[in-house]
Image (cartoon, rainbow, N blue to C red; front, side, top):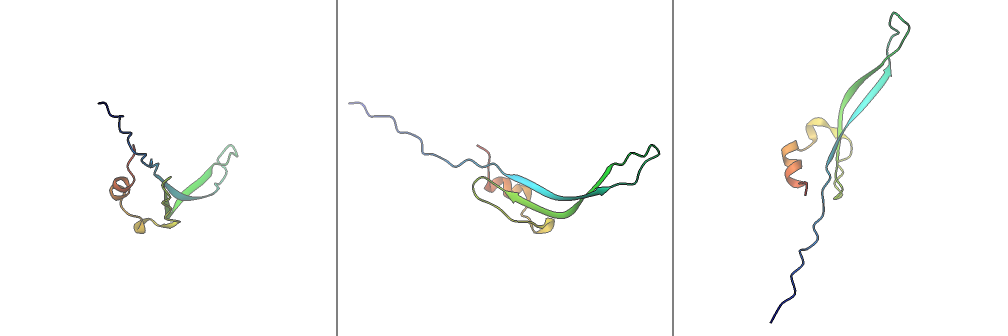
Length: 76
């Protein structure tokens, strides 16, 4: 008697992304008249994952630790 192989169950993949909010403005002209963009972070971040996690834009200190996020949203 043979039995059919048991298929593994489908498991949701996680693709965690951390996004920092950035603001920018044109810098002052240099000696040649060229202008570079000045950029800085605002202190706001967002964590999103393909499993549905979306923290929304929060202060950096309110976001769970990177270690905690990685443990809850592991890569396959």
